[in-house]
Image (cartoon, rainbow, N blue to C red; front, top):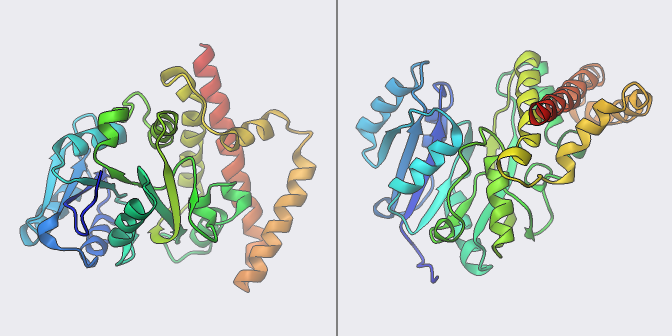
Length: 316
């Protein structure tokens, strides 16, 4: 498939209850220097109840290239599939409503898609605090290094472009969906990782380019962070049921940690304190040495607990 210098693109954004972030996301997209006549933006809203729909309608009034599509199922994979089916572009770029994007994001995605002959291209996510609090900053820090994010290169970064298993968001050639099919709507989460595993199995190539930059805002409180990681843990295991294939080994390390408690706790505590001390030095703030172990534990314990719940669901 030959890609024009400025191919028509469709940006699809799954969205539900994102009143505080959707405008920042859309503004960053429109700050990209890509020809307006070659771009459409589809926001697939899961029947938001927090005022997001009103915000979107106001935004659409001044940006007619943005369209809102209803997603009655309210889940991400159905939003993605609705977006793909309604998209008119030669290239489909999936973006997240809870993120914002550098002004060269679109052009760089298309450049790497063409230059490397990739089927899916993504970049590095810089995790930023959603609020100006020590806890929100600590949560963001926990997702920016290997101890909190494992070997997820889209989180920890890379020195040069590399072939990977999955990326954040994704810029896809349109024909990928003809070859591989759509996102699995049984997977409330992990549908992107499962899709990319399916893409690779079909001979597709997924590229991570470190100079493609986006910014993501995670949960700002420990309670929401803990709950989010429980759900991530559950949906790291459930693909066994719906997709008949596992994710990568790194997704099951927290489960091993959880299952080996209390034998693993002392080793874990020492490693956690080491990374907490390192972050405290980088931040120049001793408070991180005390808050980071709590955040790391919330990340790993909740993910492991969620994976155990997912395993129980499989068995039952």
